[in-house]
Image (cartoon, rainbow, N blue to C red; front, side, top):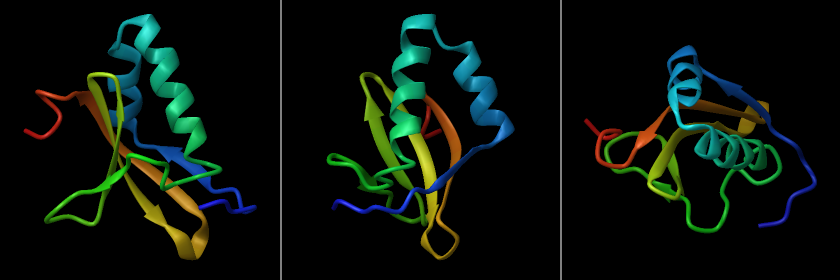
Amino acid sequence: MSESRNYNVKILKRARKALNALPVQFQERVTEAISGLATDPRPPGCLRMSGVNSWRIRVGDYRVIYDIEDAVLTVLVIDLGHRREIYR
């Protein structure tokens, strides 16, 4: 879906803390993926999570969990982490 609207991306404190704890090479990849949500909040490969009103994207072995608020053009990054730990 190609949209000309840009979303405002906000990162919660716990997600920012988790991002800063990642190895540097993954920080760059995850930051790039999060930045991409501003132009396309539903990129190819994203999935809506069951049981909650959130979405997730994969960045290698890491997952970024976020909410989309279309009415106010905002993407709120809730959490991120390694795939074996993020869903706990």
